[in-house]
Length: 124
Image (cartoon, rainbow, N blue to C red; front, side, top):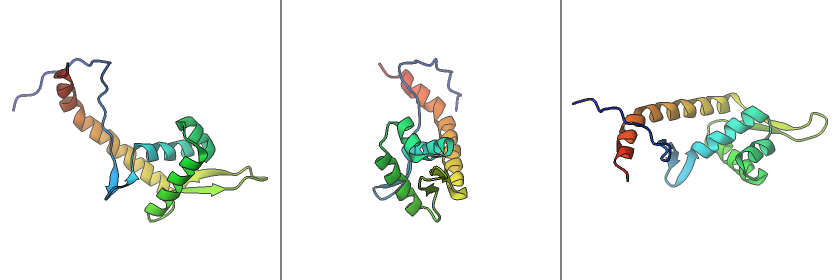
């Protein structure tokens, strides 16, 4: 099989892979959930993660609750406000889930780049 020639990128069309781990119609892990975990890890706050992602606190909290129930152990812990100030953090399981997802995402993107660039070259 001949190697494909390099394809010049066109900035108007994005080439990206989006992975989802699903059970039937239920999404267990995907880009949005990974971004929620990333936001909590970076900010220490469910509310701040939501603001960064343009999501309501309730939406982020519902995703966190779902993920906490989907995995063998919770992925995020939450503390109420008060003297300690409240906040949220990834558990060791949450850190492993996020790292595994990001690693899979990078590997899938790398594997798909050349074929998707060739496909993009066939677009109008």
